Length: 147
Image (cartoon, rainbow, N blue to C red; front, side, top):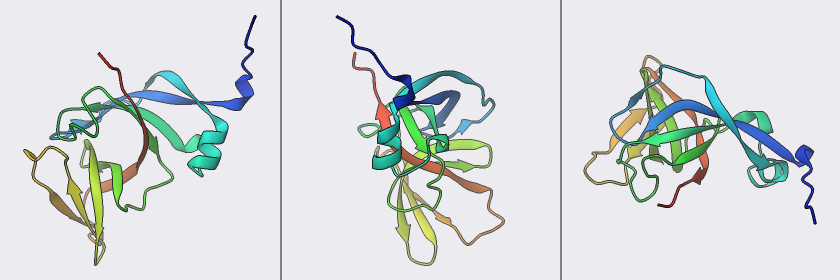
């Protein structure tokens, strides 16, 4: 007995060879992808309310988000959601890539926090046009290996 799969019901999201640091920052030196991960189109379109082209999968590196995101976790990043709010976001500061919990503050400020209390929170002034900061996207899903 076979269970046929209709590939047209899926979107294949590239898993890039990039790590977002849950720590002190990971240098972005490559944007080649290793393979793709399949997600149902209705999950992307209806539940996440985004186009299928707006996503990538990257790896978490480090321990600053331990308990929420662990070293080696895969995260699905929604590149259409770059207006920061409360949640988990991938943020580029200079050439370093971070994945952090964010909290929107008054006056277009953003509090950036780690779940590991060994790492101090910091604020970003979103009004500062000279700051070398870019919101890459919102974390919408995670995949984890259980050992």
